[in-house]
Image (tube, rainbow, N blue to C red):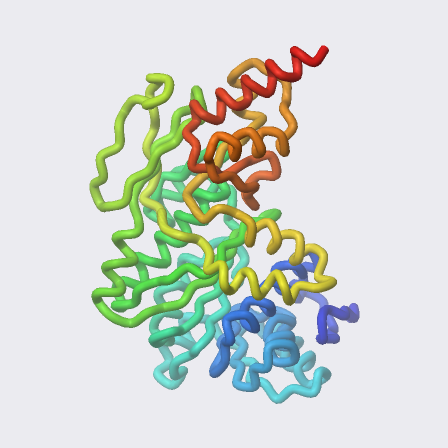
Length: 368
């Protein structure tokens, strides 16, 4: 067995049991989220593998009532052994999510963590059955090729949404995942309040709070709608509602646009929570860098990829800092975004961004 130290946990990884060291930053973020959100009560780790998440939630976030599940018998035994090695008396069951949630004696949970291999879709409805008012959901999707439009038909089949296959694919993928969670929760009369959304490497993860009530469920559904994207000038628009009106032509360049969705179009973050998390991150390098970017990001749908626009304008690259400064000087709000290291979020339109880029290009040319 290989021995691993992560956070406050010390675990052994048995043969055939999955542990991904590259996902440590995500586990760091999950611990920080629970602490910053003041989470407490019963916690369900529905896909436990080595048990590392449940162990860290107990030792670092103060949870004592944790139930861990794994359908793989070897993984469940490995997780139980790791819990005992860390001095914890936690329950680890060799059971599927569906079997546990529909067994009749699961009870309800205050926090539910779902981190499966691939899509979370088959598990969401079952986990909602063991949820209650104010339950915190932490849901991971690693089928990013589906959510990002490389397999568009699979996204339509699984999530009921047409995905974007452009520079906006990571953010639209997060929003499609949230749309699925919202519409699933509405069947149980739960509204969904997104608190944090993360897209990094090969995964997407959303953190949300459930609010019981038919009114709350309807209000969440009303936050969903469709987006329109112009492949020529990289402009976008969006509208909430079941049948929103989106123009077939780009308002900036007149080219044909394409519609995508449905997807969630509301806020992705609770900046009070992300601010606390950023302050707590300390020496967690990967988590700290990502959280700082998220905490500074404007919370509005979609962004502009500056290299894609400069390519469209047939111009060389421009300094990102100078472009942000120029747009701010013109009265626009601007920030970087977690979804693209070369992207900006702004309330400026695509034409305003293009004009600012042209101006910078002219200034650079004039300096020589």
